[in-house]
Length: 339
Image (tube, rainbow, N blue to C red; front, side, top):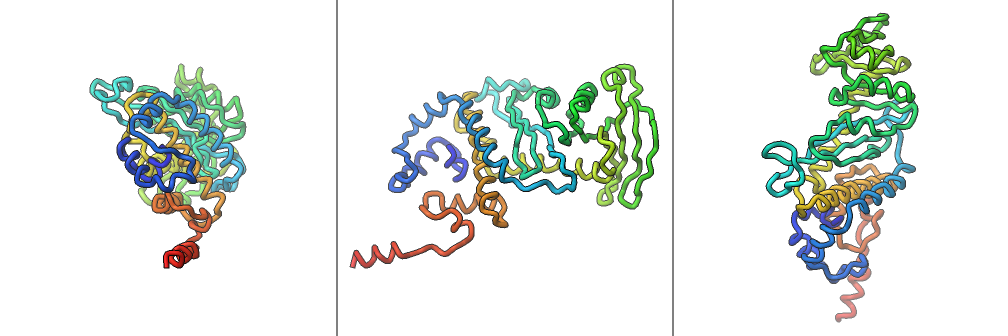
């Protein structure tokens, strides 16, 4: 299944035929001859929790090798978001989402140190984003960038009590009172920096603390944004840049959907679908591990392409990534023996 992710295989038959054409090279993989029925049975019956646990092990290996994020502050920085994976309801009847549509949802908390998916959950398509957000246990002192889909004033208060900072966008209909007006650097696009309190009856009960509202106009698009945060120490421009960096989690979803197989599935059961998703995430971590360990200026997509072209070749991985020429001593020896 990992080979299917790396090689872009699209069906059980495709996987089996691809491996069958390489039977003379399977010895160093420790793999026996594969049949379509065996692969189908294992894919349906082997619990997906096995690969979820493997993901956790791989994540621990990667975390000690990651570079820092792009900001000067030392706080851990996370971007939290979810992506819906569409499924055909007639083929996946267990994935009920709408009347004629099935779906599941992939929730990811992306750590900006190495852009690793540190928090991952797969749920039903109907599950709300903030429902999962409330269950995540971020380290104390960390900063979490979220969009308005996670709007929950009680949760904002809980995060503040736990010593966790958040950066989000303020809803346009929120009722607030300005407590103070801070000076801003207008040449950096800032329009306001104001500690505020909520004045709505229910909102004030859920979130009775002071928060910080920051206005920012993007110089490229001229679009005006209103950010909300409980961090009063960082510069207002840094808060705006943190929210802009939230786009990295969107790029993560785009990358895995374009380069790995999590949009079309080779099995129809819930276990088969979740197995394929967790294996894809494991492959992502393997690619990240290779990138961190090699310390070469290659993107993960470049590494993936190199592996795809040399998947069944017995070569030194670092030499492959460096682009070292292939040693032909063995081939020359074989030619002499033939003569």
